[in-house]
Amino acid sequence: MADRDDERLPSRRVARLLRAEIEEGTRYPPGRKLPSYRQLAERYDVATNTAAAAVQILAKDGLVTVRPASGAYVCASGEAEPDVRDELAKIRAQLNRSRSELDDAEKALTHLLGRIPSAESDG
Image (cartoon, rainbow, N blue to C red; front, side, top):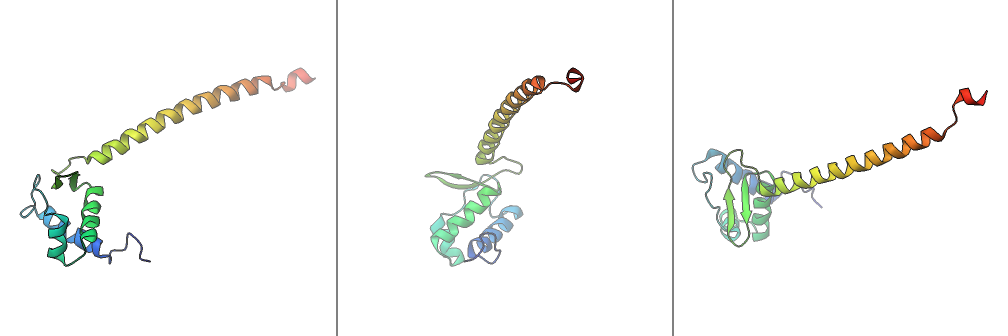
């Protein structure tokens, strides 16, 4: 089975071609809706699922935003992908939980260290 990051995959090839057109900015400027998956599949002579996978690659890379029941739209340069913001929020929450757990562990460790007799009190 081919590696998902394999540049020879049809979805990667289609994504690369679309990326070039998006970066060029003439055919797909920021805010422009991409053709449907079916239209992309016909244009690049691939399966509809392959066209959808190509668009998802571009969405993951922050070049397009996929709006359910609407389509995929080219992002403005530097525009953060909503999925990226959600992921960042999840990571921030995870960091906050980790900080709390570390604080609790430090308190427990300090308590346990306080229970160890010192060398001076043994002698």
